Image (cartoon, rainbow, N blue to C red; front, side):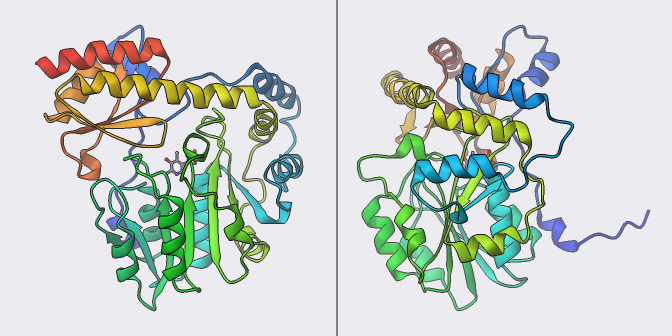
Length: 364
Ligand SMILES: *Cc1c(COP(=O)(O)O)cnc(C)c1O
């Protein structure tokens, strides 16, 4: 009775994650359920990761290494940067929270795009930032509109590249031109959760941006997607040392658990697994598009491990039907994309089953 809490929380709709497989199995008494809703890796972790976690399990009576020494060493070697340029988070979600908590003061403006990852807005609102949502251009970021909305109160701009939930991406040239026009004191947060799937061609290699002393750029990447460790929660931020030092001040001392650290070290060493993940998505996506184009729906081209589909129908009904048949996809009305669903590329068995049921759903 009479609980007082921060009024800003009235503005927050908690993030609704995709339903877990077990919950759907229980609710619908289904034997087999395929989850294609949360952009996870369809592949189980590699045996090397499983072994590393089993070994690390022996020592979970101890707190983890709060400094993430070995994974920092491994990642800094892999990326060719200093360990001082890296901060680890309990998922890269936590790096987003660090950035806002450490750098944004109440009343500062944070610019986010519409049709993007919802955590930016939630985290910024919690910290009493003034969040400006810039309308998307089609399914992608409207970088010119973002530039136009910058004021002298703007503190941070979030860019998901590739974007989730649309898969759209910003090319190297577009990004460099954009960054050139952003005032120097504004922090540019580049969320590259799908980096491993997107890299190549004209996708920007952004690492050199963090070496520029005059630029406040933070890059976030994760082990949750291409490395297949979503359940363990480990991601990282890359920035120049001065920024990392500040972000560390709001980090809890043992934020990354020891199993996640051990798994990430093993995952980084397993090039074959990474290649298999990327190949699975690449081949699966081609196949998806071919099959979708034969249907009366519009697939949205993207560079991540999922496909956004305009079903041209009531997507709530379609997602419900799929779920009743044991296929969990993401229905997109929470983003204002009525008629759309987002489906991640699965194993061929999962994809086949999706198409079987999706075609039934479209005919109803
Ligand atoms: C999946 C995702 C993340 C990463 O989440 P983790 O916390 O690292 O699991 C970050 N940003 C976007 C845009 C994503 O889609």
